[in-house]
Length: 115
Image 1 (cartoon, one colour):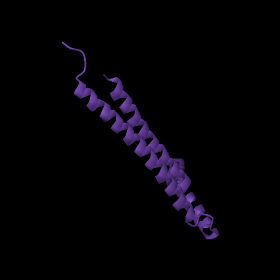
Image 2 (cartoon, rainbow, N blue to C red):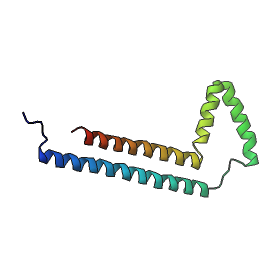
Image 3 (cartoon, one colour):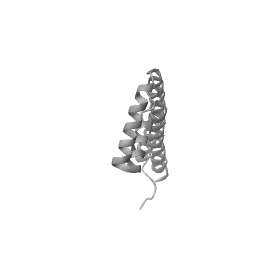
Image 4 (cartoon, helix red, strand yellow):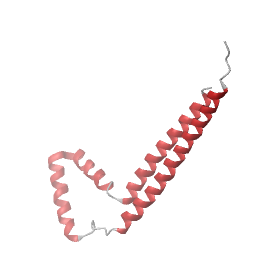
């Protein structure tokens, strides 16, 4: 049996490795661009969280949330409110696109080394 790889298979594998790396780079660049867009658009909107009329409403709803759902409900509400901020949204987009692109690069290196 011949243990050498068929030349046509080697070319297909090299092309597939290159394609996966390009996909990883595109995902990373699109993620960074999207995060910048999300942050830029989010900071252009007026921030109504500092409105004095909303302060009393927020205190009331926070107290009600604490009574109904306890500490876990308050933590969930805080996390939901944090995800509404454009900076946090941009960080989530960057983190997700980085993880996906690193997965593509890892898969490409795995394909390359599985000769």
